[in-house]
Figure 1 (cartoon, rainbow, N blue to C red):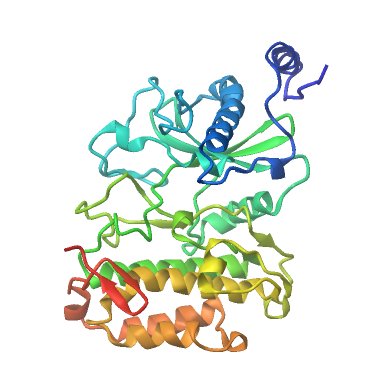
Figure 2: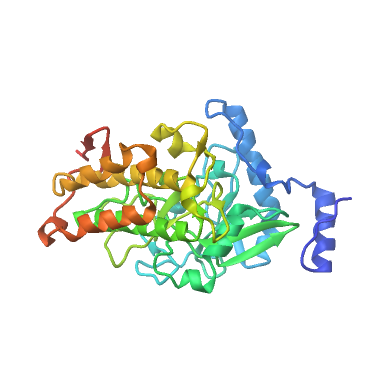
Length: 376
């Protein structure tokens, strides 16, 4: 019989007996918590959904014992997203205090969790009706993701205004598996679903993420997986059209998902670091090739490309923004600026903008391959 080790002897006995009676659908190898199905293979897709749900469902009494109630998934698996629990009822408001998101949804169904293929992440609600995200961060051997969370959540790190990451509310450990509990924000920071009404809102977006990267790199953390799904803003919404989610002073942005992160000793000279490149969505989209790289330079390139897609729609109002992006993305790799240098360049450009420019509306919702996409 497998012994399920928890914090107390009674819990260890109870969960060991439960696993013996019901089976143990988990694996303590974090690397095995991955999606394997091809998007075109519907039976394999349904099997992966069912397997992922079996793991989280098995853990649901454990989370409930800590006042956390996970979203429910109904069969047939793979057909519908996970829905909020019936209890407790949601308690969300249009104006919220840190770290909770603002309510920007109309119907509760907009809270449905459809990122099941992430596998290591699941939505939940606490006893006070606030939305959470549970993330499997580590197994017995600490991962770089867990190390990143720990480094970013010291009292000193959290007091730094440049720390644009979600706070870890608590860690829960189940038989060696470490789950990080975080507030749930919407992954629409770089989405056209969260519309910008002024140039100032997109300038603010870019500044925050460059500033956040500077902070990560000062703490010797390379994120290595920059794409729109890994950036959030402080709202609960599935469709942010026309809701004014980006007003500076009200909006907060954050990096999420440190599953590909590289965490190095604080004394490391990041300019000299060379490692095998992490080939993720952003790297492939940028045209980077497998091989040795400086992960901190890669971070700057990947983030700049992502910012460009959302922010370059202001080029008709701020012509200099085009040269800013081109100088970083079209230069040779060796000349790629550090996060700090990129932030300095951006703030210099920003300082020359007039209030009239900042108050102008963007010319579209998205920029790609030299063209602005408009919402016609």
